[in-house]
Length: 167
Image (cartoon, one colour):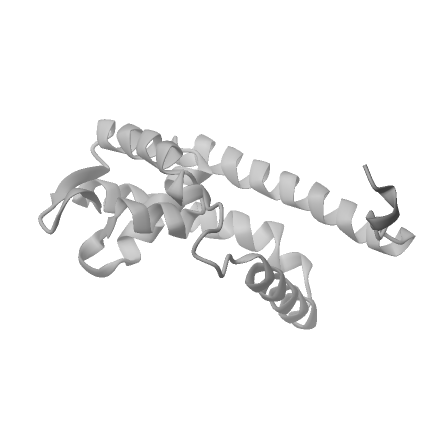
């Protein structure tokens, strides 16, 4: 192996390391906080809440399964498992896509919409308490801008990208 052409890693500075570790710590705590609140108050994990919210905001309360996986940034297998659980609760139903024999739609049911509407106030309160009540308006704006830059930089641009929703 020719080691002359291997680039030395750009190690994080002490400040970058502090910021990175704070982000990892906060992200894990926030996800756990939201998941526990929804499990306690609505008997569902956070991912189910987000799936129901995505469907409730979609035209005709329906999305193609592949589009929903892409929005959620999860594998089709994980989405299929989650939708199966939501179907069992009668919160979501699937329909075959008439224009594509292999495609399916996920559709939030009236019962699923009702469950989402009942869970929303507690979830919003948990988000507000955990994030927005702790930050000044300037900090909120800076956080939003920073997260947008990070997301845009990570969003795959090329067609051959290894995307979770294509797995």
